[in-house]
Amino acid sequence: MTRMLIIGPPGSGKGTQAERISGRLGVVAISTGDIFRANVKGETPLGIEARKYMDNGDFVPDSVTNKMVRDRLSEADVENGFLLDGYPRTTAQVDYLDEILAKGDEKLDVVLQLTADDEELVHRLLGRAKETGRSDDNEAIIRHRLDLYHEQTEAVVAKYAERAILTQVDGIGLIDEVTDRVMQVLKAAQTA
Image 1 (cartoon, helix red, strand yellow):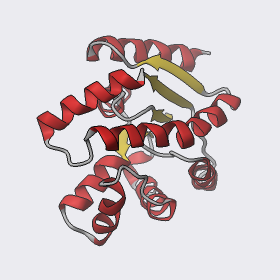
Image 2 (cartoon, helix red, strand yellow):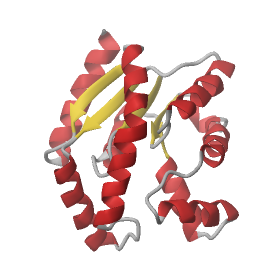
Image 3 (cartoon, rainbow, N blue to C red):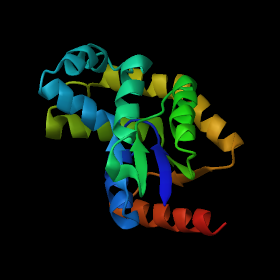
Image 4 (cartoon, rainbow, N blue to C red):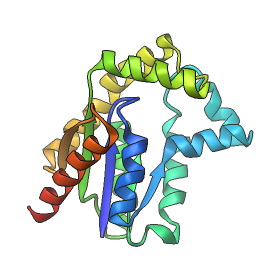
């Protein structure tokens, strides 16, 4: 069983790699970003609230995000493990996730951090914005999201590094190359 988190700055390839990793490991990938976007598209109450934050490049408040993740982790398809993408993003969310997992006598096995240079990420995300028409991908918002990542999420990375469950992989390169690096690192982490 694998319970893991993939973390990294916006545009580092988390979503793409999460899909590939979950397929290879046979665990469900849970993306908070995908869940938020589906709620925005469906104009649900959660989506309407989340959109206000997302359009400004801000994080959706912990109260909304925590409830969504708690509910999702209670579903049957996570019994054989899971890969969280986009959560936790703050140290308060790390503590909340610890509480959720502790109730089931579980903990995270590994935290995978994809790393990348900010300027490369801005370039990637601007390209993605042209392809997909995402309203939350213009240069000012992208830079704001990167600033938020550095200010808040790097503390999450440090917390997991202290627990000795953090492993880092360069997220720059062809998708297959990054996936190969990720799988090599995960294999080494599981045998350590």
